[in-house]
Length: 183
Length: 62
Image (cartoon, rainbow over all chains, first blue to last red; front, side, top):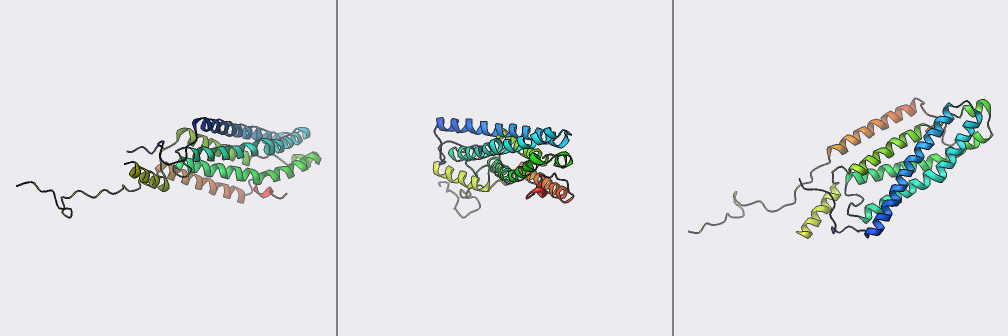
């Protein structure tokens, strides 16, 4: 079976090695940081959901809002931008391989849900700043979003490490055209 | 008598070079799609049954 791994000089835009390594370093830092940030957010969500202490619940919600806007959103955008740059700047391409395409789709989905969800976190944090007693404890935590997000991000990481074989129809056509040109 | 090469339209003629057909979508992609669809159904069912937090989907616009 012919390999579908990308070859250099196949017509795709190739980043110079120094730029490719820089983009890879930033991409790894952002994506791993994003996963770590989600784990911290999940821990805060569990604390807000389970604690009977008003100060802990209030503090957890304030920390979740800060972590969301100042860590998770920038890291998500950084992961997306550097991932697209790496795909377009190397022979892997953005739409040629299923693992790249699925990684892109899942990253876009996670980023969009995160950005759309953060205003609700802000509103609940505003409530947590002023509420007390039963009203504060009834806020609960924020568990489904970080739990599902963490599972999806880990799945993307597995895809990126294992890079399972599989060309998209577009990638296969491009490969055939390039072989004809080379042949 | 020299051996003639087979006529292009005969059964012995080699097939013209054509690009191979697309090998198809890999099995792991199909399995992943099925898993994602099942998860989506579970999520929709969970949301319908009210298994969400105040910050969840139904909490938007609080």
